Length: 474
Image (cartoon, rainbow, N blue to C red; front, side):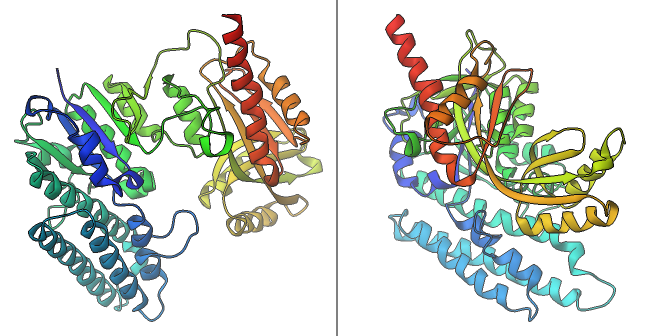
């Protein structure tokens, strides 16, 4: 049997000691310890401190460095990163020598990054150089600090526990930078035997392509999928802190949700579109092409097989997931739009230029509405550009939410009709609803305040009641 490539996310990494005693080592003997390559994310919260907070937008080192007028504010944030890293591993490493090595590792990496940024600021004080031209590389440099730290600490912990662990650093720290992702991975894995040792690999990989520019914070899944493909893994496994379930158990109740067990990449893509990412779509494409099955498990229930994701269609139509997302409805109304080409392309070009993520779109004779995942601040810039191009257009933005019902095959289930009925019976009103001909998802647009209640109602009507009915029929 070949090896597996397994990814551990940042939230789970913060419970590394528990993972060591269950998922990584558990009750395995020496004969069953190896044949596994682990790709690790930074400890929870570290990447937010290095870049900016993913949810609140609070600036981290990168944002402070990019926007700091006096040139010193980012230093304080880098000090916070160093303190947070040391605090993260202090509670994990029992041996004082290991703690000292981890402390020294953090100080060396942080000092190196600090000196690099100072030199860059000094260089760009000359008129021939522009700091903005180096922002992409700066973000890449900072991103790698978190994964390098967590991988190094994990290796120390496992070595102390008697595991033949090996730190595999893909961050390109003081290495040649002009290599492709494939070259970075194959070079680092040269001479590594996963059947005799346990490679602990950084989720970030420095390469000429620039992972952050292409995939933003989905870079660790791209590294993970490419590693699985290049090394011929038997299976790729993502360990999360929860099972891939029919809904958020905190919202609809743990007794109501069901583990998916099996689904396909089509559903995974729909989940990604709704911000509930099982895996980055481009990472999924890599594994589909390499014929590597993907499994999503609960990291803290290592005996549970989790959910297998492959290309197989559903045996019978069924609703698999109900989820939701807060969005903004960006609407362009122009009475003269009827029969005129170009409006749609122009709107799309402006939204793309301002890096606005489009989740869905509807249109009629004189109105085009994009449901987007963006801030109102970003949309004001879009509105300004479009108003200059179409001065007679009425352009507006409205905060809404979208509840999505997703499944490999929804044919014949009357999801649109039953969903609207469930929403009405819950005392809510849908602003809009749509279903595509592929029968993989149905979308309901609601006021933001109604999203949670709508998900509960949809899950109850389309998952719980259906399952109960099937059980009674059986």
